Length: 106
Image 1 (tube, rainbow, N blue to C red):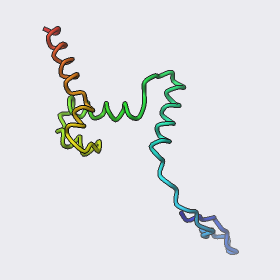
Image 2 (image 1 turned 90 degrees about the vertical axis):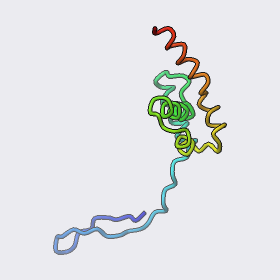
Image 3 (image 1 turned 30 degrees about the vertical axis):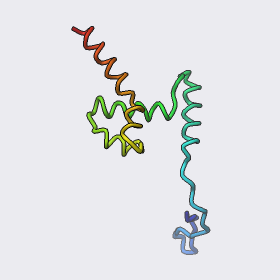
Image 4 (image 1 turned 90 degrees about the horizontal axis):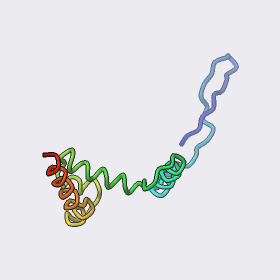
């Protein structure tokens, strides 16, 4: 990353003079994101929140609420197989809950 400083010429005009270069910044790690999220949730008094719960909730909502095909969700979440994705989503548990809600709604 290049660093510049505003310089003034003898004529009174200003210009940007290059004064150095800093090494590029590293991307934020997943561990740092998780730690910041947990700290914020602790300050707010929220329990059971993590980056993993966000990821799992996103995948479940994409499938059930947005109708995104499993293959696309698999690509988004990085699962290697449909079997691992379906166990991750708890498809049977959600379907059973939906069936119970439908039964009692009638």
